[in-house]
Each structure stands twice: as structure tokens, then as C-alpha cells.
Image (cartoon, rainbow, N blue to C red; front, side, top):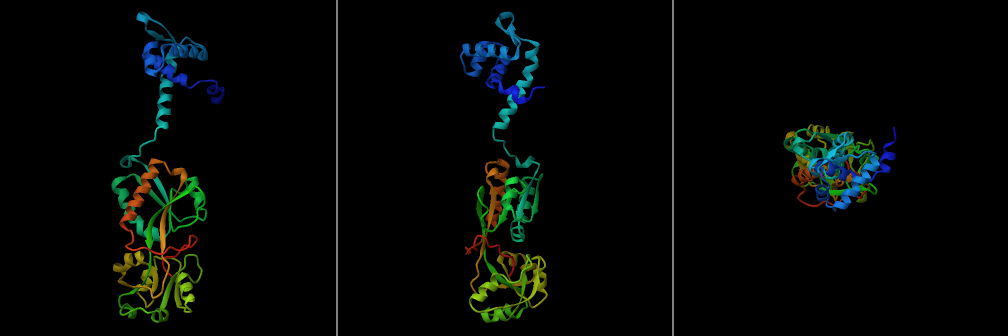
Length: 324
């Protein structure tokens, strides 16, 4: 069997439109009008088709109409279906959330999951009940994961992901000091001296001691005691609620756990950098209707959780933890 490229390479695909029109109208003049060409051009196309196929395709019948040969009857449905498929593929496909069945994969950290995922999951359940979410940790090679389709979007602080990626600002975040409600530092002003005298909890997902709070303290010649270090942020509010420890944590995290764990907050007694969360995607999916819709849902959820005030972003290569 000849390779498809060998067959199509010698075929003028415009002839398929002519064949479809001729077989539909069975009249050269009407076929010409359907194609928007002259009668002479339609007749010339029929002659070329006969030569290409090696068959008369259409012969004269009663009243000047054209009758299809068996070969034409065989080709007609195939050509019509092929043209329809090409036209459908060429047009931008509409994404219908209510009937769509697919999975979107998000790369995100704990903070973005906590702040955005509840609202996003609820929104999808209401508008796109058969659309699934798969959330995974952002891999080191995030750009490659986005380019390959392993990830649809990344929710992360500003970072240099290289060429081919788009970013949309979603949220600004600042830090606060959280502690149990009956803590001695829960009343009165939290001064720098008082802050440094407290025992602290540090979340260190990477397993490294210290953090930007310690860096900020070092700049003013101060330090703190980190009495407990944990690798996961989920356990931190439980520990703080049951001890005299305090944690310097993203404000939305403190708000989320404040009521359930009886935590109270105080402003940090020194200037700390905030951070931002961006929506990041690859140019490969920039124009895809489904991907555009999905990004719009994330942006809408972020709008409901937007910070009241701006934060000073960290450097592009900095990835702050939820608590320090």
C-alpha cells in the first residue's frame, strides 16, 4: 500500500472540495455556484479529478443531470467526512464545562493549596462536575513539566522559569506571628526584645535550619531560639496551640487555623519581606479554550482571597516557607 504522503503529495486537496460539490449538486453549474467559481473552472476540476482517479466519476443522465459512477459513490461519503473532520479540527473547539470530562494538573505548594484549592474545588463541582483536579508538588524542572503537559499550571512565587512561560499575579501575602490564645505574648505590644525571648517553631520542608526571619534578625544584630523544627506546615498549628511556642507564618495560614485552633496573631516586630503567588503556564496552552477557562477559574478564586494590602515581594529565586 502506498504511503499516505505519496498519495496526498500528488493530490491538490482543493479538488476534494470540488468533488464534494459536484457529487452533492450533480450539476456543473450549481456546483460552480456552490464553490464560488466559474462554470469553466468547475468543469476543469472535474476533468482533473477524472484524470487523478482514473474514473469518469460523473456521467450525463436524463435532463442534463449527472449520475455518479460506482467509484464516485464510494468516494463521496469518505470525502465528505474528511472535509467535515478537517473543518472541525481547524475551527477552535468550544469548551463546555458542564459536559467536559478531563483532568487538570496543578503544581503547587502548601500555601497555594490552602488558600486557593477549597474555593477552586467548590467552583468546579458547581460548574464542571466531571472535571477532575490532580495536584502535585512543583518539580525542580517546572518549565519542562509545563511544556510537556505533565502540569497544566503552576501556582508559585515569582520565579524565572525561562522562555515560553506566562505569569499572572494572583495574590500578595505578608507574615504574622501566631500563638495560642492564652499565651503571655498574646496581650500587649510584641516588641523585638520580647519576640527574641520567645521560643519559636520553624517549618523547614527542605530540612535546613534557619530562614528569612533569622536572616532579618541577623541584620539587626539579633537572633532567636528555634525550639522545634518540623518538616510539614500542617502539624505546626497543632503544636503552637498546645505549647508556649510561637511561629511566624503567612497571614492567610494564621487566619485559616485561627478559629479552629484558638490562635491569635501579632504583627512582627521587624520588617519581613512578603511574597506573591503567581499563576504560571506555558505558551503551548496559551490559546487552548479549556486551558483558558481553567485559568479563569483560578483567577476568579484568587480574586476572592486577594490581600487587602500590598506586600514587598521576595527576590525571584526565593521560595519562602509558610512559617519561619
